Length: 525
Image 1 (cartoon, one colour):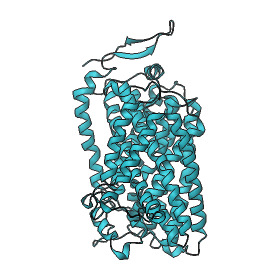
Image 2 (cartoon, one colour; image 1 turned 60 degrees about the vertical axis):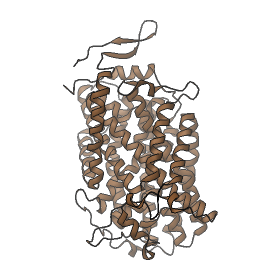
Image 3 (cartoon, rainbow, N blue to C red; image 1 turned 180 degrees about the vertical axis):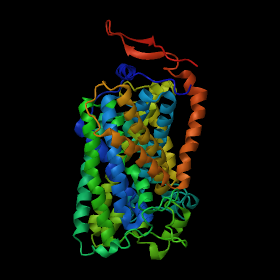
């Protein structure tokens, strides 16, 4: 009985047209949105965390995560071009597997984007305090204002990460003002970011410090550390996978895209291919110049990222200069090999560019809330669009406050792993939805068809499930706990108030073009 409410594709498209967001984004802006999210999180923020899990095997981890992303992106491209509305995997699941599973997907996406935005806010704080305050202004922020508590994996004497809190709130304000304005700012930041990383690649790969011997041992924690441990090349891939959610964020912007049937697939696949090359080259430059071996625990297994134990090790003099202990990894690498001035400039680039990552993640998260509210599964007041700004300002403000709180108290490594729990589940469900739609609606218009879906679809399901099982056990447990909370809300609030469950769908009447609510035949409980 819980799989009984499947929303017709025609109704989804009609609802979006009736109460829609302003279409202002083109293919180039969509690709820049994807690049803005993909390049940044994994390179500027998670390089140190990935090296702590896999050592030089971080390069292989990028390949593994990228391979899973490629097959997932091909599934996304087909379904996003079929259903060019806000909501991403949530909307796709609603049209194929029904309201109950769609709710679980939407609820997981809420976790994914909000926690990921918090993680990048923490990463930005590292560059702000290290490069801007310390290197340029000579100011050392007190520990209690620069990091979360040590018990949560922060730092000795830490209490609150004030810069992370502030940047999350500033980006929230920008998103409330308007999507088009946000996209223009993002385009500038992406250009700065790509330029900085290109310079980093050129300086490190040609440096006299570059030594192939620093890649040995290549897999100090092994290829596969074991399910639930989150170490080894596969464990690192599970962590840095969340750096690729940029292509997912592109699909959530479909309802604000001009000519989505053409532009969404271009934005999805283009941004992913462009960014994967940068991931591997930057990782090679960083490890080849200063090394990237993890700090091992007494049992021969790397200390967990974002743990109190690792924070204590990194406070010791012998580990102070290690890549895995840096809060601003790439700027730190350049300073270590004699390019302090350029390292500081790269720190400035990260300081300027990482907000674009936060922007894209918050943008996507608020649009998931927007669509769930529009379907009646969350309070409909949340989907209110500001008369001047044309944005869902209420849910944007609420989300931004929660993201800022998360960024203030938790370290980046823990946040990244938690975000991945929701990410991987959502990607798996998209692959299932694409395969179901091929069976259910074979004649529905598809401007992009996933090649060899018989192979790509199952590969996405298996790949995402495998990476999920390689997250740390604590991060894996977050998803079922979060889902249980969501199910309580669904059965007590959402299911009785669902538009589809009440037999109501918003459409546009063919006679006279008048908009109205009409009943449709749906099962009632």
